Image (cartoon, rainbow, N blue to C red):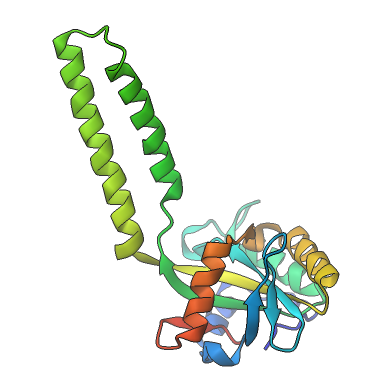
Length: 217
């Protein structure tokens, strides 16, 4: 099931969009994206059961209730960009809503850099006892923070929105992906999805007991 692009209708506001989302019907995910493999090629495209291709783009969430109604980055501007996307992007696409582990790699990397800096100072050998003890305490705090971030990955899940782009060939898929990203504007600000994240979504596809829904448009 793909979202077929339609001519945008003017005059629709936030209330209508929210009503449409509230009234959407969940569809079992395993009926939505039958696939064979994730290919070991640039971008790791997905080979579907009908020998066509698909790829995923992460769509960072935007809470329209907490945005101003007017302005360049307002809720109205985001909705207008979404309608514009539906007007100019003529290929099919789907949007999946999934519960995936929180991604804390950036936080872990930041603490890791701080750990390297502190350990370098500890090994300098030119420290008085007070400074040395302070660095030891900092090192212990950093290790605790890294451990917390690692535990978050296993214990906390958050809702992610993922667009699935299709193509009959790899070349067509690449073009459709570029077009979708170019026309998304502020509606989605799509981002590439890592192969590990794709595998998580595919795991849920093969395990329909997991919380994962396809938004029917």
